[in-house]
Length: 107
Image (tube, rainbow, N blue to C red; front, side, top):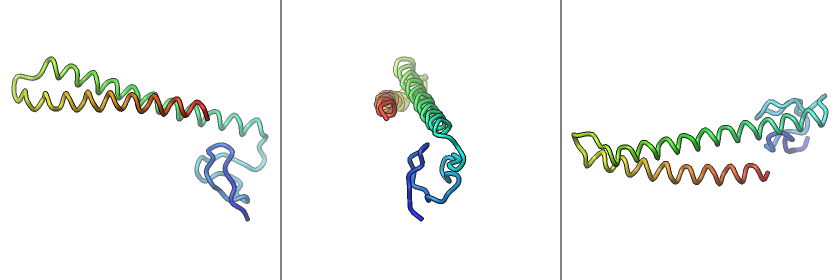
C-alpha cells in the first residue's frame, strides 16, 4: 500500500482507496474525463467561495466608510474607531482574496 495524491483535490490518500476520504471522488471505475471534470468543479467551488469572501470584504469596507462619515450621535469616538477597523479589514481582506484568486486560477 502506497500513499498517492487524489487527482481531484491533491490530498494524500491510500493507493487502495476506492474513494477519496477528503473530497469524496470515486477513484476506482471512473474515466480520466470524469476525474478531470470533478477536478474542474472543485476549482470552480473554491473560486466561488473566494469571490464570496471578497464581496464580504467590500461590504465591510463600505460599512466602515459609512460609519466614518455618518457616525451615530452617541459614542462617536468609538464608532469612528470601529469604522477605521472595518475599512482596514475590508481593504486588506479584498486585496488578499484577489491575490488568492489569482493564484487559484494559475493552478
